[in-house]
Each structure stands twice: as C-alpha cells, then as structure tokens.
Length: 100
Image 1: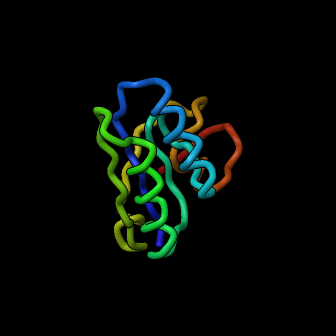
Image 2: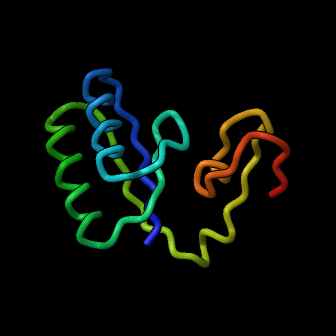
Image 3: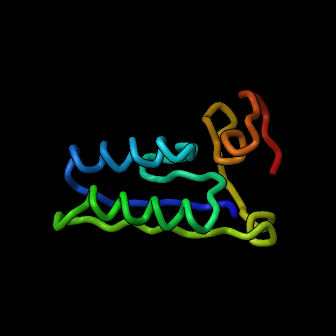
C-alpha cells in the first residue's frame, strides 16, 4: 500500500537520520519533511520501529499514513510547474507543464 511519512523534528541531526531512514526504505522525498512510496504492512511496521529508535526521547513527531488507491486518486496539488511536484516525483515525470 502507498505510504506517506511526514515528520516535524527540530534537531538537525535526528531529522537527517529520519531522512536517511526513509530513503533506506525506498520512499521518495516529496517535500522538506515528507516521503511517499510503496510499503507493505510489515515494512511499515519495521519503518515505524526504526524511526522510533531514531527519534528516541528527543522532541519531534512522525506520522506514517497508509494511503489506499481510492484516496490517492483524490489528492489535489497546487504546484509551480518548474518545481519538483508530488505528482512528478510519484509518477517519475520530467519538468514541464503539469495539469492535475
């Protein structure tokens, strides 16, 4: 199932570790503190455990949100065409005009 990971971590070192952990799971970096990609239930559980260890007892919040295909089709996006938008990253599209 598609998975959205969003975090708010003030500590730069811990935020970098969370970033690298999400990349290790094959997730695509879609915003400053947001990743998206395909993870099954077991991989989501593993990711949750790893991110819990990364955060430890430090300040921060991490959300791991499964997204079904129906809800994925309802996502709306506002993006400047020259930017790397969510839709482009998920679909692997090149830069240029984008119609959503």
